[in-house]
Figure 1: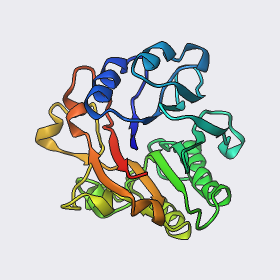
Figure 2 (figure 1 turned 30 degrees about the vertical axis):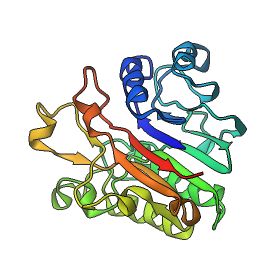
Figure 3 (figure 1 turned 90 degrees about the vertical axis):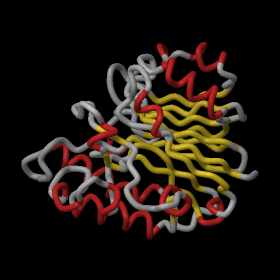
Length: 259
């Protein structure tokens, strides 16, 4: 089974790039973040023409939004409103024997201060709530999405320069890694991709030439239970999509699982 996770920064704006990626990678399941569209306006026909038959949608107008599109039957669709906000940041389904959760964690604004910056406070509260909704040692859990956190030093172009920048602050990194350890989840990108250093999934639109400067961050992740990780035979960062026409600032992660 092939699975893609991608922050597309508007599903309708990126539909041609999604079609191109689907043609190249041929995923069975595609998890998208920042779809930026209400469910009623989601481009279902485009996805049906790509071969997808089952859809779990959680969208709102103009911002946020997540979805899971599948060629395999979807069961047990669920949505969790983190921090009691109906802001379309989570969708989960059961596909085959896997419980797949698609997350879009808040970016957190510019200032890493929970008192001065309500957006950062929201992000920290969101991370705290993660601990309560996932059971420890879930043997069939796959968690993917834009976490908006680069947890390791090699996940950013300069740990020293970004240590006080939102997405790489100590409190964000520690909370996310504590959640990962407490739920015994495997970071598939770090486990399966070699060499393991300097892996990024996001480059700012502000960079005139992202390939030359390479000032990226690894904000996007696919984590899973230990038993699933043993079945994962390939993990790839599709960096080439960042150079396509009208790109997202994020690139997809693709995995292949033996079922």
